[in-house]
Structure formats: structure tokens, C-alpha cells
Length: 182
Length: 282
Image (cartoon, rainbow over all chains, first blue to last red; front, side, top):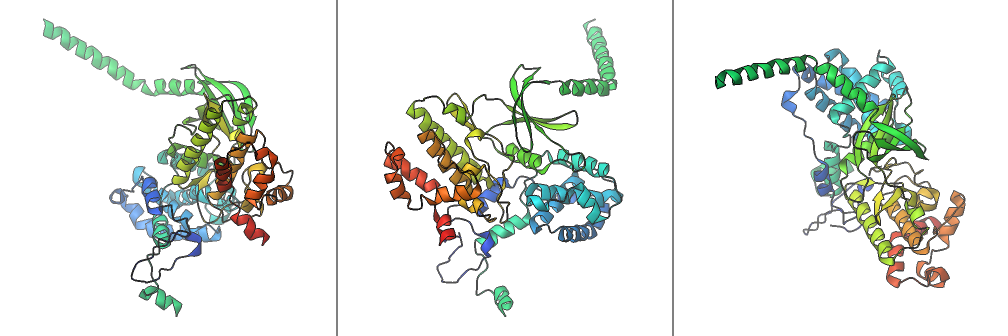
């Protein structure tokens, strides 16, 4: 392992590649950190069938909103995880799924995004065109926070992917990277 | 005969249970109402950008606690700093880090309930103390910071005012600015005197090193009994820091460090790493 960026250097001489923004000092072990934080698994089987039908289109909406609001991928993943968890735990009127999706996006941004990019309720309403009042958003926010028990820093799949990539699991010889180079 | 008595007791119990069940909602209502007057504010002890801190007493246990009140804006929901502080404090369980007792809503404002300690490091240093107490405090602070860094969290507001002392043991408080490490962060954090050069130069890809810088300043302050760099503006602060670019020589020539051990100077030097500063200047 490289001491300054933590990349894995195998003995057979193949060279790993990694993105510059995932650097971390060699003494930190990101996988171990993630394991410590990995505390909530979403019980996928118990999602209501109506939600399972709508989930893909719902996520499409959320992707669109997060692009408009210039949020990062991590916030988006976190928001989807909040939504999955909330819907699996509590009964939600299918008509309101989009309201909950938007609120989850806001909560995720509040917990990990840069301060100036956080969409507050007024901005969120302007960008998502949802026909709900500010009060609805606030009520919905309270419900989600309570259900999550204030624990908003969870590890998402993208965190794992970033950690694995930063270990240099993709090598220069791999087909994937070669095709990208061309 | 006995059997009959037991039976009647059982039915009575059943009836009582049923009545209790019916008025359950009313009982819960009054319990939650009393929850609201559970804490009596005694006095205001501090005010920050995000809220006001009160000293308060728990009516039920007569314990003194600190209440942190957030200035909730009505339209924007729960403030992000409150969300972060609560979710981070819930994860941290360490003897040298403040414990969050609960979070409650009084008069529609969100309050955090925490343990109350009456002295911070600035006040503590106004009195003379045994050397081993000071050493112990430095060691415990370092342990606590290692603990939070291990969980991928940066404190971002380390300063003597945010370190409370109780029985010669330090307690870290105020996680309102802390967050989980990410590639992109706001540079405007930490009090000016303890702000690291990468923050002063408006860089937004910093990491745990900014906490270490603050720690170095705090450790030096514990040893010298006055802040290491007292800049009046961001530029002034950078100029003061620039003076120590040749760390060891500066420490040797500076008379106030003469009484200190070499190992101790090494410790400060490690915390106040100048790598970044050299990059800016070159």
C-alpha cells in the first residue's frame, strides 16, 4: 500500500489507477472505517408492492432534481437509502411518494452537502414543482427524522465503491480502463 | 375459597388494566406536557452563530444540564447544523466527548440536552496547575480527537472555548460545525487564531490536518499560557504563521520556548505541519 495515497500496489507489477479526490493517508483503513459505520441494512423484501412498482420512476425524478440542485452523487444515494428505509418501516400514501423523495433529498443534502448547496424548503419547492405547502414538507421532514432516530450519517453503496476504487482495485491492464483510454 | 379470591383479584386487575388502557392517551398527553417543563432555565451562558446555550435544571432528577437552543427558522425546517450535531453525537461514545442526553422541543424550538460543566480550558489556564494535570489533559484531548477521526469525522471547531474541564479531565464539546469527511468542504470554519493555513488560503479540499493544526495551537497555548498566533485578520494570521517556516530554528531562538522540553517542541511541530504553507509560498 502506498503511504501517501493508500493505493494498493500488488507484487506482480500491475499498476492501479485511482481518482485524485479519493486520496487518503496510508495509515487509515477506509474499509474498516466503513464497517464501523455500516449499521443499518434496508430490508428489501418488506417494501410495499406499490413502492416497488414506482421506485424506478421515483429515483429518476430524484436524479433529475439532484442534477438541477447540483447535489453530489453521495447525497443522491443517501436520499434513496433514507426513502427505502422509511417506506419499509412506515405506511406512506403512494400519492405522496414524491413529497417524501424530495424531503429525503433535502435531508441527505443537509447532512453531507456543502453549506451553500443545501436546498432549503423554499428552494426545494421551486425546483421540484411539487404542489405541497411548506408545512407539508416540514411535517414530512419530522416524520423521517424520527423514523431514522436522528441517525443521518449512514454508509451507502457509493461510499463502498469509492473506498474500493481508492484502494486501486481497477488496474491499468484491465479491459475497462483500456477502452476508456482509447 | 382461595381460588375464588384469586379469581376476583384477577378480574379486578383486568378491569383496572382495561380502564388504564382506555385513558392511556390522556396519561401520555400529560406525561408529554410535563416533559415540556422538565427543564427550568437558570441563566444564559453563551451564544453562538447557531444558537444560545442555557444552564438549566432537570426538575425530575435535580441535575444541572446545559440546554443548547437552535434558532430554528420557520420556513426551512430543521437546520443542517442541528442535524449534523445530533447524528454525530449519537455515534460518539467516549469519556472525553460530551454526551447528548436527549433532544426536545420547547415552544417549537429544538433544544439539545447535554451535561453541564462550568469551566472551559481558557478559564482553567488562568490558574496555576500541576504539570502532570496539564500533561494528562493534552493526552486525553489527543485520544478524543483520534477517536473522532477514526470515525471519519472532522471536528472543524477545536479551540480552548470548546474544551471543557471537569476534575482535571477534558471534555470536547460543540460539534455544530463537524461533519463527515468528503472531498469538498467549506473553508470558513474554526476560530481565526486556530485556523490552519489551508483554510486561510480558501482551499476546500482539506482533511483531518486542520484539526491537528488547531490542536498544535491549543497544546502550545497550554504550555505558554497564551495563544500561539493572535492574528487580527486572515492576512495578519498568515503572516504570523509564516514566521515559523523554519520551525526548529524559530523554536530555538524564541525565548519563550526555552523552558520546554525538546520532545514537547517536536509534538507541537508535528501537529503544526508546515507542508501546506510551503506549497503556498513557493
